[in-house]
Image (tube, rainbow, N blue to C red; front, top):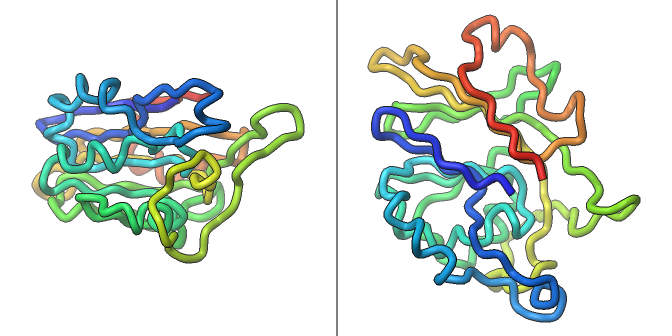
Length: 213
């Protein structure tokens, strides 16, 4: 849906790690697990990924995270919703996960930037929205409040949680903004995914990535 890798000066950002296409029959009646045969061709491209963004917690935005995590840069951090952290808590993800529910920007609120430990980029999480999957049907929309006891194995184990868009700033050695990228992989329209104009007045966006499902 929104699996993209952005590279700037050797520091990569990966959004919504999902390569394993699964037939609908397997999703409904079987296990929802990564398929190494579909993911393996991409592993060599992930060695410089230092930040993973997960827009929301449905399986088609994060299914392959446990499989690819050991292949990411050693400094990689996974950021997304608290539901994402709770879902994968028992999975032994090989890189740290950070939930950003309490730092969200909205059209009226500036939010709080999360700064990568390497000091080379920062991320602003923005409250977005998820449309209904079909007509009036909106599936798997729970917000988890505690860690799962077992790793997710079925489509219903991947509850939506909060949906987020992100601004990513690549920073220079003084903390100044070199490049600004906007990611939004799911939306219900205004005000979802919007943030105060003052943030763009500080620095305009250079690239907007909008791979809507």
